[in-house]
Image (tube, rainbow, N blue to C red; front, side):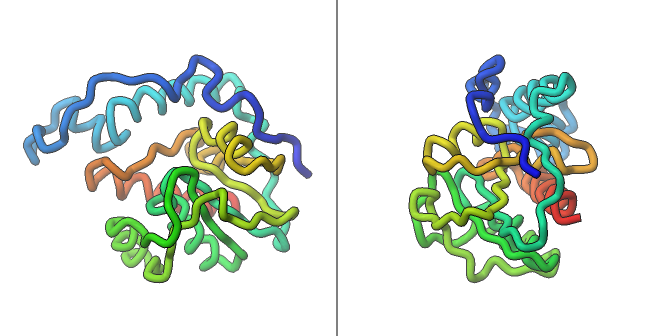
Length: 213
């Protein structure tokens, strides 16, 4: 079934994950402003988010991340969703996957243990008939993996990070590859405007539906 394991790819091609462009504070943009800045921030989260989204999309078009899209997992596998802080993207994926009848779990690369989900993630989940009230963060170093886990990460940079942080050699897939309009990169919405936060969480749900079938 499995055809790929996380290796050196991640951000090694063009170092997309290291690209930085000058930031614009959303508080500086008037609420009714339809400038390019506002459109970028609402659709991609930030200028960096736009650059990375476009860069990863171009790499995906030439097949760089094709091997991180595997066939759908068997029902007996546990889906483990991983993001940076385990408060926005991966918790929503976990509870949504569970609502679809799958065994699920989540953790984060850079979080502490025992913290609640982001308030906006909790509000969005509630709007979808889901609950993150009982969610508590767990760092990947403290997470107990199983041999049969199906690992799902949110960004290409997470591929190598998973190997580094877990020491495990599980096959890994990119959540965004399973969306109706695939892109391997799902930008972290934590510091982003409300419009993008909702867009991101909707994309996470699209990915979960694509994985669960």
